[in-house]
Image (cartoon, rainbow, N blue to C red; front, side, top):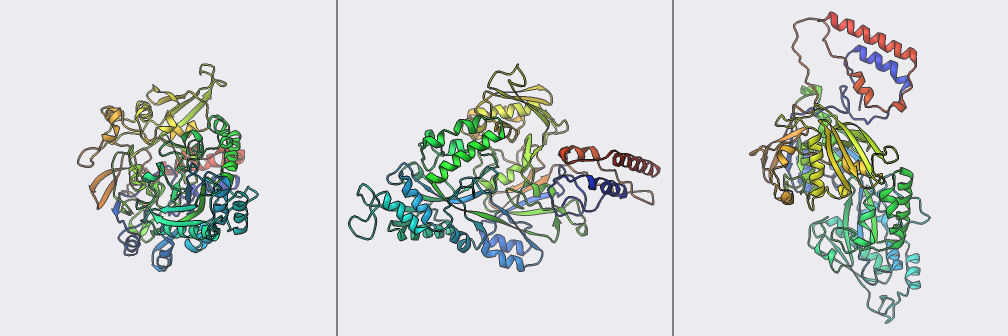
Length: 622
């Protein structure tokens, strides 16, 4: 939690004066010393040990071989972990879900009544309670409950509980009847009705949930069969672009933006690989697309997102089954300061920035924080990384102009500030365009010592826009220009106006121009960094110091990181009070929403007097 032990009595006095007048909304974490959110890292090293099996990861944590499990912990291990010493379990609602996708381009799955009947028949409550042991909640919308854009709970109906009578009524009215009296319904055109439910063979969870749907359809007199696909869980199998009926998958949202609604279910993408997996086409849904993508204010965007969900939930191109809790397990005997992040739970980049050794372990600085990693890295090329387990490592190597804080609020990072303008605010901007001007920090450097400047940012954005097929490209397709107007000022312009452009550009990883300009942009996928044998120039809080494929990767703290915390010099030649620098009050104030501050003039006068007194006292110690 932010707070805890203060650096000196004067700071404590100032805090006591300010607190009655101020209620800033600050993320909390367990810690024993004061640290601003923009500080760290504190550990010397991160080590990611490749441990592919769930039970082996749990055993490694209990045996003190790792300090944190990288993935969500299966609920069947919770009882053993809770009984173990020095292990903490935290939970956060997942920004994603498990679902059945339905091939809406195939008869009779293209009939809305059939899809809705299947959704009404499925007992989502039972899936959450029985299969997830209560660590999940039913979900109908394609936008998770954690997202403020979600329509969940706002509709006059729900698919949460099994409603067999209602489902039967829908099928009867749509002409799905048992013509030949064999105990199973036929399609309205008289053809046999068989539903094949596929799932990834590697997932026992997917099998259990698929069997629940199979039983639900059998209760409707629909001939249904569950069959393993044989592919890896969560990867799109080739059948998605051919002939399939239903398939169970998982989906994770990368943030809280919902502009993806305009692509994932857009009619024009019904036959586009990797988009619109249910091959859904609906004019009413598409009618909201322009407003969602190109409105510039929140209310219009929100209205469009809600309108699209109303159509989507009714039409049911997918059956969303649940939104589960992410259960994080970690040791507490050596380290503290873990962050329960809104998106990743405790195993996330915020924990890596803030975790630190306890005082009785010689902390807060130093130590090796040991992770499990469910899969080995598939590449050091972050542009082509497809595995979440690779990305969680590579994220520590790069920075972006903005990030999301632990509670999903926008936070300036490489950028100190930005200005967003359209033609309405600045007549030099063409009508219909959006221009962002970012002012960057001036103390960020690459690991080879070169300064990180606006030239690097502009180069990176242009590279990501132009490199064909890279995973960051979509948000930048309407970017018409990105250039450095000065050493630490970058200008980015889009040829459209949109609420989403800020996040589309500000959250992109930034690369060193002096390194990446050597790469032929069409051949970006062939870029294959090989650290630490070959130098890999990065800017993040950690850099690669050792890697043995299939075993582990070690990252070492970047001591020149621009948000680094200085380890105090404990040597002294004087007796008496330690000369501890007073915290940078202006830095603290800069990172707090001033709308929450109401400070009276007398209080400010007292603060000034205290600061002056502190200054006199510290000078007398020199």
